[in-house]
Picture 1 (cartoon, rainbow, N blue to C red):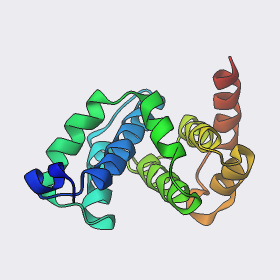
Picture 2: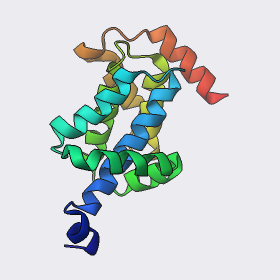
Picture 3: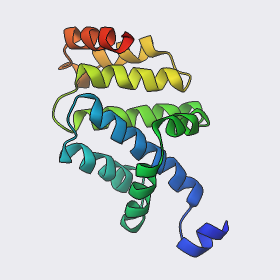
Picture 4: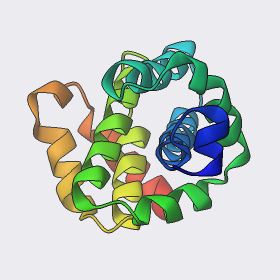
Length: 151
């Protein structure tokens, strides 16, 4: 147990992971041009419910996420094992649904994150576009977002 763990009663290493999750969620929320309260609440809710993070740790995680750059979050994500990388992307996919619509820009962003951390972006896009839960994604919107992203 580290000194921060003794002082704050939580796992600082584990919180580093959640800071990265929230920072990635913050970046994702911006790609469709609007950050909704549903997206913010969804990202926090996933930590509370799915990951078992205690509510008293959330303010610190949020504050640290605001101070972390996207590039720092990507570098931290590269240290995850393959299962953890997929878990991160599933977290982001969940966030993409929180505002009620899975935008093409969000599909491309998640594929970009996956590529940056060593996963195959084409496979990720194919997964997001063909799975039953993603049937409402507009393929033309994804194509336009990919073209825009390349520029």
